[in-house]
Length: 163
Image (cartoon, rainbow, N blue to C red; front, side):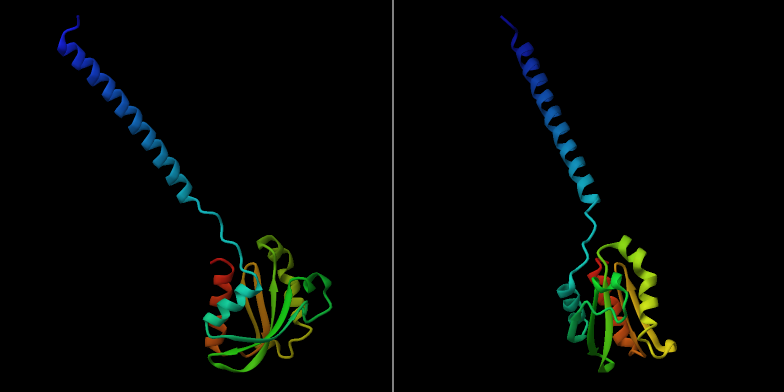
């Protein structure tokens, strides 16, 4: 027969081993979850309805929406183009804004220079050409736009882009 102190020592060793296994598992799970939390997925850009909602939250009203209106004959820009009339804040009179909603940053980079070329066909005064970039979105129009209006458009597009 084993001595009671030997039995107690054996039980203590088994309990210590179980605690070590549990602690190792918990540490592994916490480390794994921390790695997941540290790398969230990139934000997805908003669709047009989302952009309108962000504009409205900034005090900008939208009307006369026309999808596919690039403002020029560039067929590559027809798909991502939407024209609208916008007003609000210090932009009392509605102004035409051409939005180009590119699918992603790569499409934005490929097409961005074409937007300025296209805008040259409808901008009557290059000195007051207004442009707001928030990849993958671009908003352009004939200015001058009110300073608060322009800043609100920039904030709305930046939020809609996921920033």
